[in-house]
Length: 392
Image (tube, rainbow, N blue to C red; front, side):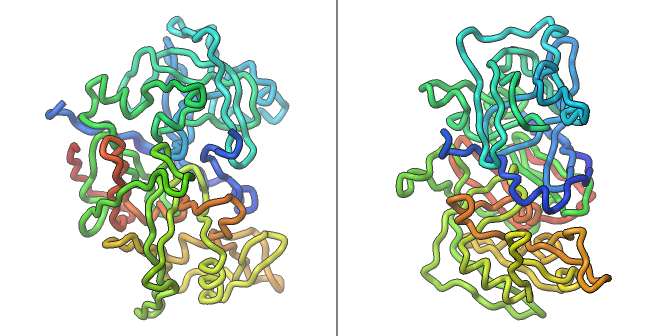
């Protein structure tokens, strides 16, 4: 089988609020006939949500899909942060464990996770029924948050070695493997199609690929791990071999032939973080200037609609990303009527390593094969209304 999880668009956050939406874990702190499973994702501006349910009877929640972490966790009705007058957790929902007959807390095991944007969640691990895209997983282990400062819960779908509990020397089977064990899919793998910035549709497809959602051939890229002691098999790092810029049908290389860079594919991070020399080169080619207020590069929004693309090169596959995916309105104007846009590419010294976030991933169709530790990638087909799902 396959399992498809679709999402619905919703744009609410401003560029200023979203710059440091870094939902990856902060490591400094701490069968043959199977068909794919597809789940729909809500595209809130720069965040991608899945509608799920937990407990018996089912309680509906909305969780942020995150390839950069591995736990499923959600807020409870007892978290003081969620009980303020502004009701910040209302959209994502809060779980009332007293109303679930299948709720089973795990004794003497605490849940605690920190993210690079300084949000955190603390509570307990518990088993309960978990449902996504019509697939029901019984006795699934999840983090139940009683204390934290995040407005949304998370559905981490990365390697289980990146679970919060992994630091204690133990891990549990998370969503991709439990879907295999439950017979919904054949292998712990999924493909991610975020679609374009203005779209309200996209999906994550567990156990399959959709050949109508990408152009050309999927090219396999080995996942980097144990490189220089920094990366491990718990993270989706892949090697970039170059960058170029295409403008008016002319392509200019901005890196040399010896260039190599390991970058993290992370659906939980809004923007992209690259070495500063590449950031500066792209800013110059797009007539963008550095602005201290935004701690990044800005330009007149009309400039960001020009037919220019930044091309990310991964060996035999190149992913072009157009300006309208990389620049976002700040809500401000220059000289009274010229709207300003912020370049969504930042110096990676801010976060300690290269991150290829949502504004890159929207232009790529990415398959995450956790069993074989490879990524497969091709340029996306935006707004495709066709579908041809193939199990893997």
